[in-house]
Length: 278
Image 1 (cartoon, rainbow, N blue to C red):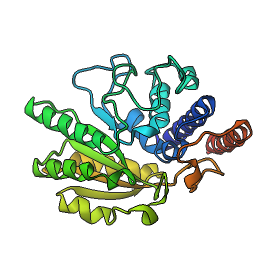
Image 2 (cartoon, rainbow, N blue to C red):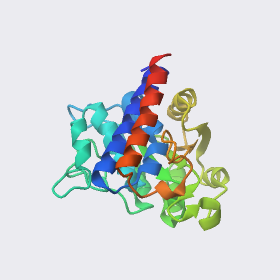
Image 3 (cartoon, rainbow, N blue to C red):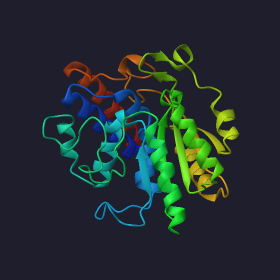
């Protein structure tokens, strides 16, 4: 896909996030919106996957370590064709397969159940090691949060990945600077991220998480990096695309009401119209 096509799809993914959380009257829109461009690039450009065959043996794997941003993952999966987009409105409802955190037993395209912060990256490291031991050439991607990175298990996993030189592993850090209780710098910052990852023998790439030129170049560089895992530190804006959510910690874990939903969708419609003029 071209960058313009990716921008348009990311905007649709954002509409899905807003629609799902509004319908559920709960959920985590802020961190889902900040990662929407990353989800879009992974599922529409980067990964070797087949929505018609979600369990394809040699598919690339993705683990959403910050599992509470499931609305973003679900929206990307739905728009990629894993299940109907209309099902997004069943988010968190009784009997729905789209619950608050991803479940591999019930959601097509989900490779790992996640949500206990810090644990998803460990599963991804295990998958990457497993691929090497089996002589498989699939790649493993995992998205972690900056607040999540206060968990010690994140760094244990990184220590192991660096030691084992798992160059088939790509970690993406959604660095929006906000977590449930406030700014990272006020709660318990894990900075300096770049120095920490380098200490654990990672190749480090810093990007603007909303610039598809940078996103494309970063994933290419990650694929070409040999002998060590890669981390892409994606500097993002929490709530990206929705005027009243952008940069606000208030929207970490609450849903828009009817009036706010209308404003949010109008914001995203304007973005879409502007993209269509390019």
